[in-house]
Amino acid sequence: MKIETQVRAAIRDTVDRASRKPFYWGGLKGYQQLEAIADVLHRMPGPPVENEFFQRVIQQVDRTLTQNQALATELAQAHTWLRKVATCLRYPQTSFSESEWQMINSQQVAQDMENLLEQLRQESENKSILSRFHHALSKRWKAYGSELLHCYDIPGLPQHNLQLEGVFNRLRGHQRRVSGRRSTKELRDFGQFQVLFMSASQTDLLEQIRCVPMEEYKKCRQRLADSESPRHFINQFHRDPKKTINRLLDRYVEHQRELELSGCGDAPSSLRTV
Image 1: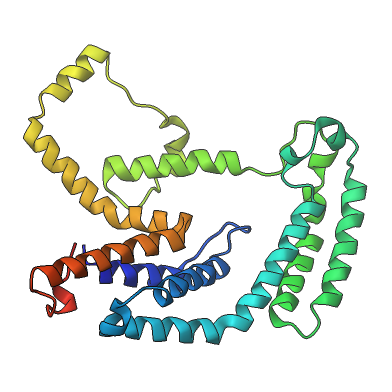
Image 2 (image 1 turned 90 degrees about the horizontal axis):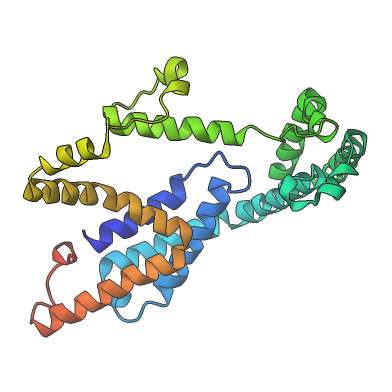
């Protein structure tokens, strides 16, 4: 795969990334990933000065970071306040011992939230993102806050339904793999029954596997690996963006040296593949 293509894919991911997880906001995480890309590109020896593609990439990345620095700073402040809300709600429950959790009651949590909202209101003055965050949080607390407090008074009642949602997410992923269809509408009616599929016996399963020619199996595995390669790269980039981009550009530098040693140092960047 072309290294330039992977760099462009990483930059597009930082710009367009979306996330439903409140403690892993897409915009803020994307800005931090773009900062990591810029840091690696600026420290890259030699090739960025000689290569027009990397020259343009560095300029565009720096311009994007400069234009969005103020917004990212304010978004980071909002994220900090979101963490404070989680602490106020005593989330997650696993952070507290059983004796500590038994001392918590709904009235105490409600009072703490009201105090926190007042502090946030004062802090959000003349700050657009914090002001919108305070408005959205206050609106939802007034509408649904009382329904969130039952878990502090009823023993064993979980704070969320994420485990149940996780089961259905795995079911949807399995349904897409086995059917090849994008839609998983059928799971709304029958998803709770589609948990496990198996052959009649291990011997029967082994016989079915042995019917597949080894060469055909290897070809299918390679096609699967090739199709999964872009997703694996993005997953690695999400876990450690700086390390992933650094490793990618190290491969680029190594390939540049190989081209120079072979006498092809003037080959266009579009032909430089790994």
